[in-house]
Image (cartoon, rainbow, N blue to C red; front, side):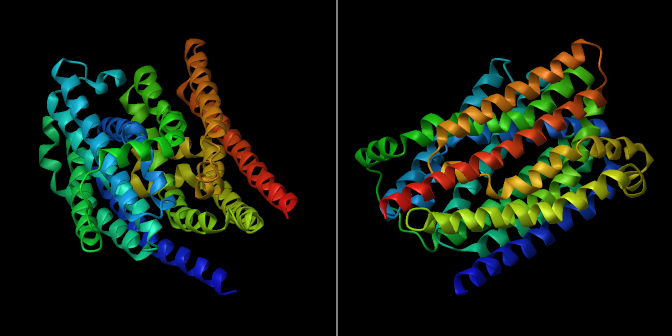
Length: 425
């Protein structure tokens, strides 16, 4: 009973903090949509899409091994590796832009080196912050996670409001620069919190080699899997931008962002706690992990499905009222995307399970199939003359089905460990 109460208390702590953080972002949206145009949000979504893709592989996924490592020096050396590889990717992005090979060109956006400098800055701040979050999970310091989320939301909103004057330099510039400043302020806060409690040993290259070998599956499989997972979510922004233009992408981005906020809030509140609890029990008591996994899925389904069905029904009118009549289209997109949102709200909180039980190959195959089915389908719809609405509906159904299949894969993987444990006994 004590363990159960601790688990619930941790979730409530993160849920409360994340709720306030997301509420701040949501409350600012009606004002931002009247300051910035759909085109600005379309370009900003390109930045966030590229940021998510680069983050998926820049650290070689070795930060995921931080909670697994019990040796202090090994933990710090995993951080050394992650920081170094993130810095390398940031520099490579800038070098590519010097040769007119900017990643923004993939989305059909005319850009200057300033955009790539902003992207590299955002990647550095976000990548290091993500690494430190795994350390906080390892140390069971969930208050630090909550405080950092609140600070990021507040600083992000203030910065985006303050930088509207620079938006004339390039579409979406104010939104992008504001996001980066928010991430930078948050990193400074959490880094100071981190320095007070960590001892930094000298770099030992033999230890680095040992850790690469020990966690080679994270670099070999998890990196590709995480990249493909990110591409599966971000490819729709690239396709919509290239095939249907920045305005459609802006409407889609607003729909995705607005509904994604509470979904992210739920996932960010439950996922770290589930990861930490499952990590403690997966070896000695896999049945407890299985029960916890089923319980989370069931409760999220009971709460999420009715809520999202209702939202899908009222979304067009709601978006028109809150954000302005111009954004009614985003509400219509929410209705089309409801299949995907239902899958996300149920599965995202437990989406680290295959990494945890070292089923990286299974995760990789799932990510590959999801990416191929979603992207090829959207391309076929465009080539055959289908509308943006048809492409978005297909993407939503495809993603929703993939989440259901993932939930089944996770259940079977944990069940197999539980069965093996029973046989040993």
